[in-house]
Length: 224
Image (cartoon, rainbow, N blue to C red; front, side, top):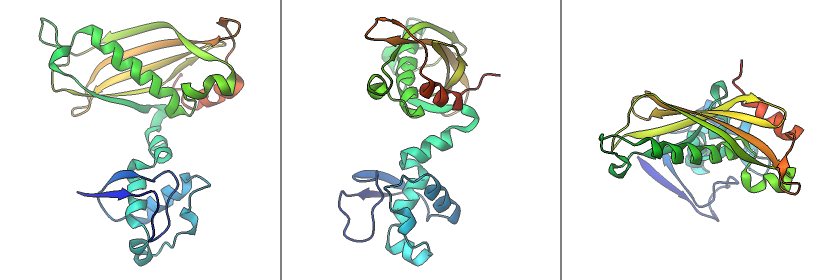
């Protein structure tokens, strides 16, 4: 598997915005479908539309960059492809020996940090990062209730992947549903339901969900 480092300034061929100083894995030459997918999600500042799309020119002027983007190094593309059925991949982790209890499997206390980290990523992946929420909308969220269901045990060396989606939308709250799967087998090991309430930091009390935020959350809802 080849490795490509895209420097900040590239003398030969155009650059794609957002790929500077990024290291990507390259597996195969880009297909016409991959190029089409990339062009459909490229940011306006990117120069994809100006690139020559014949195969020879692609090999000279950035075929590897286009392929790397199509394989998932381009964040917006990765996000859209993960959004199948409203669920988004949020977090990957490893179970270590220090997660074990006296029964020889990961103790229940260690599931919480994995799911909590995933919930932070969920906002960013949906396009409403915590780092910008107060400035953009004047609110943030606080956890009101968290419920975890343990399905199968995990042991040291197991790889986990957590996905998530919006389960319910209220007037002042949103409920997220997250699932912890085994990265190798796909087996479901635990689920977590988290209720977050919108909070006005100035008034120090709960407040209604902003309409702009609701519009985004509805796109990732899996409620029946």
